Length: 313
Ligand code: NAP
Image 1: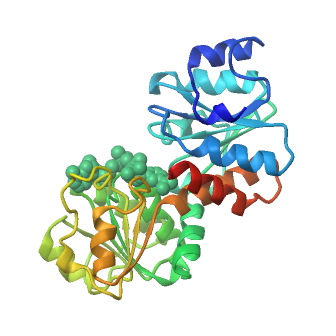
Image 2 (image 1 turned 120 degrees about the vertical axis):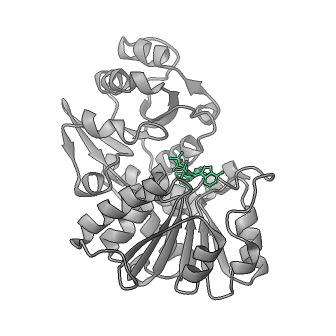
């Protein structure tokens, strides 16, 4: 069963499983659907948890192209699955495929966890609440007490982070995105959650700035936590997102990227004596919250953390 972490199943495999045959083992009742999905560390983390809990259920990864999401969800339900995780690029499309949404999924406008409840599909979002837990774990601060800058606020992970900050009513929220228009769209959603339509200005709790040195410099002086939610930093050759000289010891810098474990941004922040953490804690806590939804019991977070650290090494 340990090779479930290495094996990537296909939609064809899921079709076969729904007919009671094929390579997906009968114990598999949970899976992550994504495209691509072969690099996902979720099977290693979730199967370690399921084993530790004495559950017979197992978790697999299934590659699902975007146009086949509806079919894949239907097949998993027919095959008797308990639920699914959804990752890139399915989190938005899934909103329309659920019979019911929890408050967070509705407010963040994205779904990363499905629970099959008879013929009903219930959608949840554990990315936002997972970020709250992650920040508390790595920095010992509550997100709601921090002035936050989100880099990549217009992307999938960045918009979820920004909207969770709005739900937490963070005292300041600065949104930055290469394509600035997307950050303005997210700012409008954040203001709806905050029930404020104040025009932008120095006192506005939500500010959009361009990804430019002078704007970053001005805002970083009034920021406690910088969250990188861009994909910049996954390659060692990627250019700097934030000039190193702008990073100061009073900042906390959280990079959602966890491979490499230390991105150039985190390296620069460490050299500036800022506190830093990578995205492994977010992966951990969103996964633990998903498991709690499926099994309705506390997740063995320490077991999951160890399995993740081993799989990511
Ligand atoms: P996405 O929806 O494709 O968003 C990508 C973001 O990166 C956008 O804001 C995009 O800006 C920005 N970006 C891409 N290339 C850039 C560049 N050269 N310069 C500046 N900005 C650039 O992807 P996603 O799903 O949100 O994922 C983003 C990152 O978060 C990835 O590294 C992913 O691995 C990580 N992540 C981690 C976790 C975790 O559990 N730790 C969970 C989810 C995601 P534009 O809008 O201008 O294109």
